Image 1 (cartoon, rainbow, N blue to C red):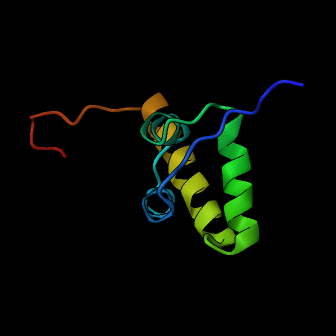
Image 2: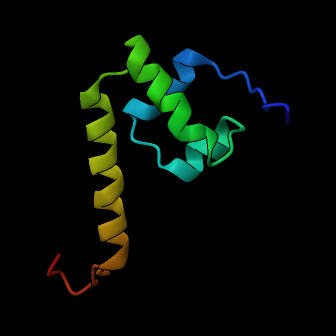
Image 3: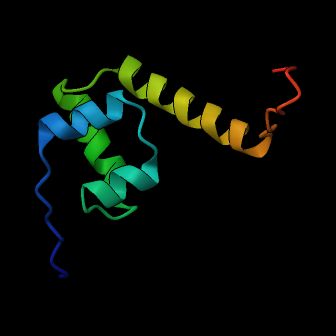
Length: 82
């Protein structure tokens, strides 16, 4: 049986980052997680009541909005028509 990697995260910081809308890549890097760990951590925080469904939904909406904005990034010109 393989040992599971354990990572200690600072709960307060992680919850703040979720509510701030940090994307998956940033959360993984900042909190030294793997891609497989992130959904499990979020699920545990939801079950324990540290974050709400609303926190999670809002984060996903912010992340999706940013991804769409990145796809359709329109540079604002300096012609005064901002």
